[in-house]
Image 1 (cartoon, rainbow, N blue to C red):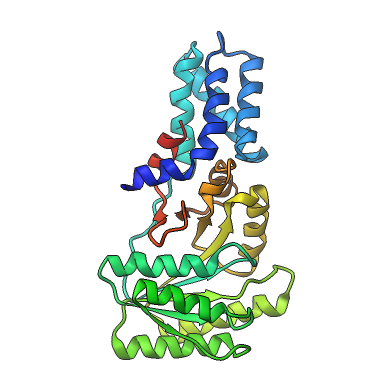
Image 2: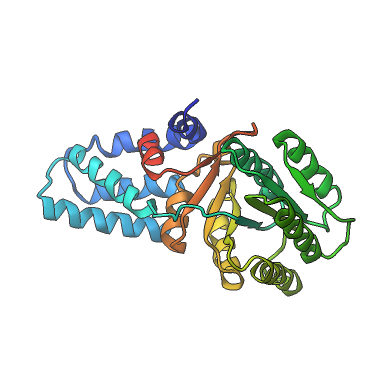
Length: 297
């Protein structure tokens, strides 16, 4: 199954809810106040969010006026263009050695995302090592080792309760010795108001910067798509403490709130880099704005 087919299947629930509403919106006879009110409702239902929805509608009005568009059906293509522009980011190509750190609250799927990323890079011919830096959650390392075996990559782990930064140090040392291309770091779920846990995350980042100063270091925040606007709120708070390079949005296939992609990209000015569209090991895929919008409409 190609990437477009995967993203189309992954947002099936969102499309079923959104496309039906859009059909009625753009079946209107004229571009009047009722049309824009119905469009606003459709966007909010898909969890595009209040701020992003307001911005989209204002931009749509401006474009409709500038292009002298009269028919609602012609306005639909303009909306597609605007949504695509809002979520289409130029993400720099990876350079190697590459370090990817995943953070986020409990239960968003960080460990699963690490395992799937390991498979993704392995399939590209890269050598991968994983740092099991979630030393707090019971059986977290064991879960990661299962994923490591499935992906065919090494997992560096310490005993439960060990210093996560020490695990990362050992993983980096091992990667250096073996010339690995990619280091993936799984971290413990943390609440934004737990300052000691946020400080621990910053300590891990300092270890990476010190031990691999020339590496391409990406910090991704993992969010659960099923939480909708709560995911946006989480991302805003996390970004205050940790420089975030992008978002991994998990469980996109399990929600009708896929419009949160637009809210995240617009309000946080961050790219969605990967999306989870299923439970299989190859169901974490690079996000493509064109494919997403085309599948949505």
